[in-house]
Image (cartoon, rainbow, N blue to C red; front, side, top):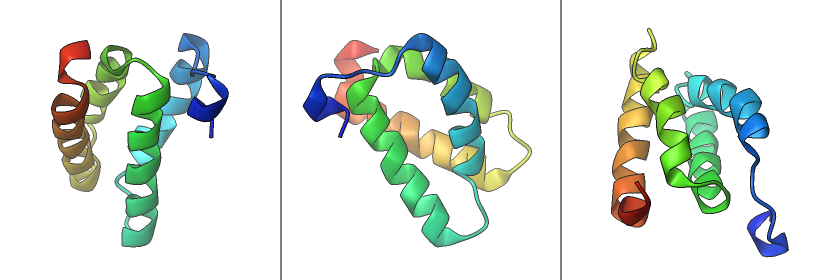
Length: 86
């Protein structure tokens, strides 16, 4: 995993990668949503949580209700586990 190798996601990588991941976090297949949720939680360990917030907040404006729900859940997770960073 990236964290084990002391690698973090750069801002440029995050700008390319995160909007797509956040939009797909509301996928109609529950198993895909669960995997996306797990991946997003792992990303919070390799990228500053404060830098994730603009992307997550953008996901709150999605037309897909599942995406909005996943974004709210991810915000709650970040506040519980990385609250001091935000």
